[in-house]
Amino acid sequence: MTYNLPGEYFVKKSTDLLLGVPLPFSTGAFPANITTNAGDMENHGFEFTASYSNHHNKFKYDISGNVGTLRNKITKIGG
Image (cartoon, rainbow, N blue to C red; front, side, top):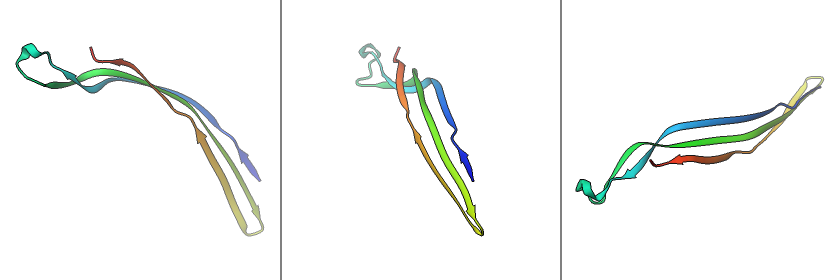
């Protein structure tokens, strides 16, 4: 008989996300966008897993489950 209950907390920061940024009308292009590295984002959350293993004679079984949360936050967009 085996029990296992690991948990994790994570934070991931992504920078230089590609976004379409509108060009000013003075460029002569109407309407126009340019794709550039203009955004940052942060992800964070928790993840928990629970598992149970057991065997009775020749019969073996494992049961496991997973639950998690994820939150995204835009920290920079555009210039």
